[in-house]
Image (cartoon, rainbow, N blue to C red; front, side, top):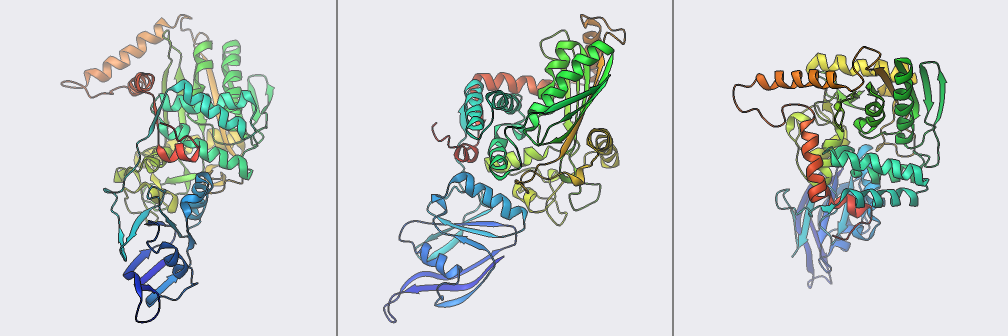
Length: 469
């Protein structure tokens, strides 16, 4: 909390004072962050000393339990972002003083000519994102992971999964997660050298992820599940002691190659509010279905059980955007369009009222209780506690299409999928919206990504040291 009332700061001998600040008032609640932007000579360092209690103001009062940091723009961007994330999640207030006005805080004030005034969000400039070709983005991401201690194989896999999410338009699960992953490696939440271990028993297997990156364990599970289902007709594999796995659809390829339909379930840390609730107590769990087709791409349905993916809200915060108020509740359960409210005790409502809650609970039982002997309230949130493994779990089920009598060429699957597509299209009296079927948006995003590159928010690029345009 920071509370400033009618603050006046002067320097110089009595009778010959210079006013650095006149009559300032501020109210910054707990769990928020404030940037005070002032050029050299504006008096920001003197203001910092007053806010810290090292100097007495000429008039006015300061009440504060906030952390005050001068010259914050001189800090390592990743360290600064980690600090703000941690303090926000702990409900603590942080005040940064800097010459740079683009630091990632909730509010910005400008100190100039003795006046301290808020900068509204519309006039606050947000740097344009970098545009990076997918192949280049994979190379850069893998290099960052190798530098953090990962093996070449793990770094390549994790980078592939993150960039594929960006290619398909799901930036919530893309390279924007990389700074968080690297922070978790530094603080011990992810063991970058851990290798998953698989134990099989007939058509069932378990993978111990050993608190490593989530992607290698999920990829191992998908490979085994699809191959075993193709051989035996059905298979199931559980993954435990895991971290974030990224976009579930990234694990579709083994099922497509083997001609196996896949059901993929994942549980995550609490971020979802039950119908009518005001606090996050359940995971916005993921459910994915992969249907093999005769085309290059399988047909995929991939969704989380909140009204929107948690990552989409964080991606909006990275871009400096607002979100629709129906996506987010603040810490008091009120609709909010400020994505920064998510990390201050906010939550995402469950989709579909109690039916959505039922779908969430299905994932809890399948991926949580069966998959890892746990449930989402016990899973660690990766940003809130970067020094602890998440302990999230997955369960993949494979069903051989040929074992159920469908032709190996998958033409019968394609025809029936087309019948479903036509049925949806037939329900519109005129021109249908785009997309009107689940795979259309991903196809459009993929074409755009390869044509114009992937947008990497400036905040992410800065945190990763990718400053060149």
